[in-house]
Picture 1 (cartoon, rainbow over the protein chains, first blue to last red):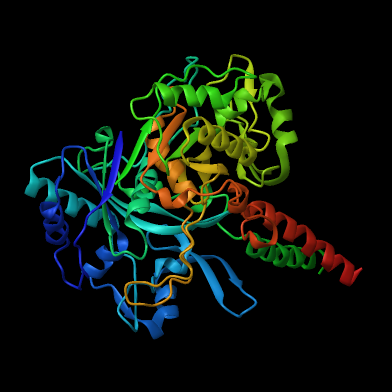
Picture 2: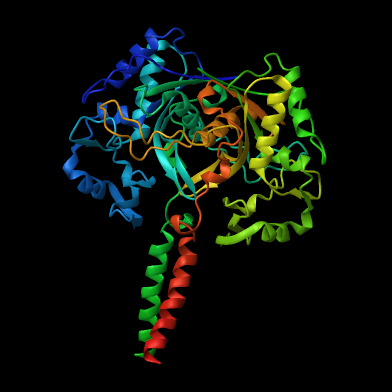
Length: 259
Length: 259
C-alpha cells in the first residue's frame, strides 16, 4: 500500500526562508509526522522562493536566455507567442528553461533552484536530524513531454532516494532477463505527489509512504543522473531545426563540390 | 490522501480470458473491494494477453514493422543492436512499437491491445455493473522518454477517467490565470500505480483511491487524446533523421538552381 498526502499549513515561502524549518514545522504539526522510508516531495517553486530566485518579470526573456545552455526547438504560434524548448544548466529540457510565472509575486518570475540535488540532500539531512528517521527528499518540477500533451511532475532534485529501480539484473515471471527495464521511480514518486498537491491549492509538499526500499544514503546519485543530453539524446534538436541545419549543410556541400 | 495498492492473486492471463471476470474476481477477493471514484489501473500486457495478441518471437522485427505507422528515429548501438523509435497505430511514440518480450510465454512476443480506450471503457462498464460503483479504468504502458533515462508508466487507454485536469480557466494563489497548465493526471495515476505493481512481481492491476473528481462518464475522451502527432509535434523526427532529410533536400536544391 502506497499512501500519498499533502502537508497543510505551508504558507507563502519568502526569500531567505529556512526551508528545512518550514517543511519540518509542517510535518511536526501534521497528525502522522514522518517515518523511516518516507519520501518528502517538494515543488521546486518553494525551493526557488527560499533561495530568492526571483527576477523582474520584464526580464523574463533575458532570464530564459541566461538559464539556457542550448536551444533545442522554438515555435511561434499563430498569436505570435514564441515557445522556446531549451536545455537548461541542469541538463533539463523544458519550455522556457523552467522560468515560472505562476504563483509568484506580481511583477516577478522565478528561476529554478541553483542546485536542486544539493537542496534535496540538505533538506533530507535536516529532516533526518530533526525527526530521527530515514526520509528521502525529491524536488519536483512540472514538465511537458515530447509526443504527449499536458504536463506531469518530474524529479529535478533527489537526496537520499534511489532515482532508478534497477531491474536490469532481474528476471521476469518466466525467468528471462529483464534487459531494458529501468523504472525512473523518482519521476513516478513526483507524479504521484502531484496528484495530491494540486497546482492552485498552495500545497507544495507531499509525503509518499510505502516504498522504503527506495530510501537510502545521502550520497545516492541525484536527479542529475536522470537527464540524457548530448550524443545519447536522439532528440537533441527539434525536427524543424535539425532539418534546417541539414539543409544549409547540404547546400554548402553542393557548392563546395561544384564550386 | 491518495491510496494505491496492487491486487493480489491475478495469475497468468491466457488468450481469450474474460478480463472483466479476472479483474472483478481479484477485487471481490480483496479486503476492500472498490468504491465510487476509485481508478483501476491495468497493465496493457494483460489486456493484450486476454486479446491473444501473441506473435512468434522470430517474427518480432516484422511485428514491429506492422505496428509502425512512421519511423521517428533509429539508432544502432556498438553491439549492433538497432533500436527503432516509432509512432504506432495508436499514435504512441515508443521503442519497438510497444512490442513486448518480457513476461510472455517462451518463443512469443506481445503486441499492444487493439484499442486500449475501448478495452478500458469495456472493463470500466463491467466493473461498474458488477460492483454497483462508479470506477474508472486506465490501461498503462511502460514508455521511455525523450531527454530522460529510464521509463515510467503512462496511460494508453482510459475509460471513465479524465485524462487531463484542465486548470486553464483557473487562477493561481495571486489570482492570476494558470494559462499553460494541463496536468496529464492519467499519466500520473499510471505512474503512481507502477510504484506498487512492480515489473517482476506479477501484480498487473492496481487501485488508486483518492481522486474521485477524476472519475466520470464512460464517454469522456480516451487516452488517444493525450498523444500529440503530426505538425503539432516538434519532435516528429529524430535530430539525425531530420538533419539527413534536410541535407539531401539542400543538395538537391543546390543542384536544381545550378543545373
